Length: 80
Length: 358
Image (cartoon, rainbow over the protein chains, first blue to last red):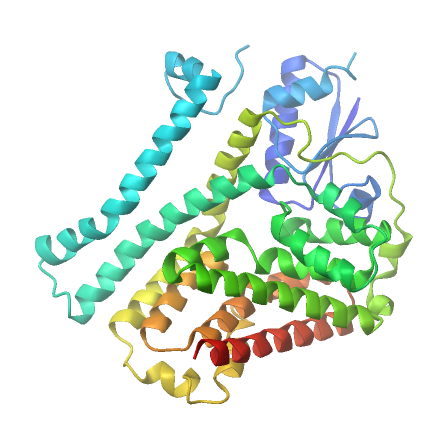
């Protein structure tokens, strides 16, 4: 599973990355979490408000920082 | 594994807060505490500074210190209330919905709608670049997109809420109207100038992939309240240094600056007053909350309201960090024209207000 955290590096992006890593650890997923900071790529996913979360090239969240529990729900259906 | 709630309240309290009734009770209790604190703030510092510490209310130190303490608490309380309420209300709008409303609009009507939507759409200036790309790639004209980007920080809830509580609703309404006029006029002018050639080419080459996620759709009311709380914390955490500097300067002006110092350079009798205020305001980087104490102190020193609103708009709408951010998508000539057009519009509004309010 490839998880991308989209955002130019503001405080919210850091918080989203933290929540995502925590959720991955709680679910025990085999996943790579990487950050995407360049604007053309971010916009290419159709994102207009950062931070955003992309799981296996599918945009699942945009414009807010979710709780760890909410990230777990987002990751659970696509996870194996 | 327990769910992290982000609070350290006792378990019983947390469980009660998570029921609907408990949530409303907590909200009501918070509102009561807020009103009490706001009411008690003035008398409290009167007693502490003048009676307890024995400072002279008419003296420089006494009135300066009193201004600083009272304003710090007052503005913080106002910010907490305003940001919370506005964030919850705005969570029913989203930038995605705004773009859908603006898609295919022509210049003119589009600029008016964009300025209006800029006021009500939840938007952080850190998203200015992806939003610009997203709008333009979806076919929203550049001038219309710029109207949105100008209105969003200019006519923001903090500026309007603080103006309303300190100078009354009439001034706040004038400010909203003026901000909209600046955003509509500047966006329309820039669109007319045919500035597309000064937009970085990659913006037009970006293909929007994937499905669009509405950033605020499907949230429960509890989620929205939670967003309100988080927004209060995150904004206060970012702006407190600007706030303290602003209030500190306000206090110094309030207590120490000679009565005619500012009126000589920017007063009603100086025909260049508004121009001076805007030129001073452009390079200053702060936000509405940081400027407000300054505006208040300068108002007490007799500067006309139009000049002060123009100063405030220049500080809020035009700043170096924002220009650096926009440089990612706009070429330098367009940045220069942008500053010139928005600055001119603000100067015009300042003179207009000085005439209207005189």
